[in-house]
Image (cartoon, rainbow, N blue to C red; front, side, top):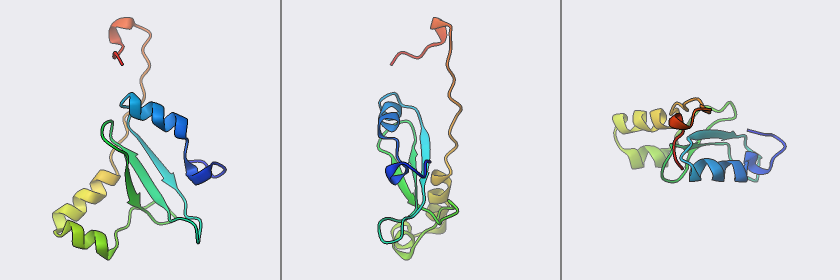
Amino acid sequence: MAHEVANGRFDELEAFCIVHGLPFARWRAACPGQWGAERIVFYGSGDPVSYDVDDAGKVVVNREVVDRLGILEAIIAHFDAADHPIPPLVICDDEQDLIPW
């Protein structure tokens, strides 16, 4: 996250990660009257997913989300998905270890 960057985003870096399948997570603080706090998670494929969070970065759910998810197991899975572990970025100097992009 970056407080001095619009919406806490790094568009070029995030686009690079998405193209190359590199998981990431980003947190953005709220700006009252403009946008709410959120956590964006990219799992390495598909589209990044947005989760509502409080100003401390903890995932929260509202009634609409609870109604959509329905059962406690789905709500817990929602929290687990938002806390998806991001693996370390490993850069190899041995061409045999490189992943072809």
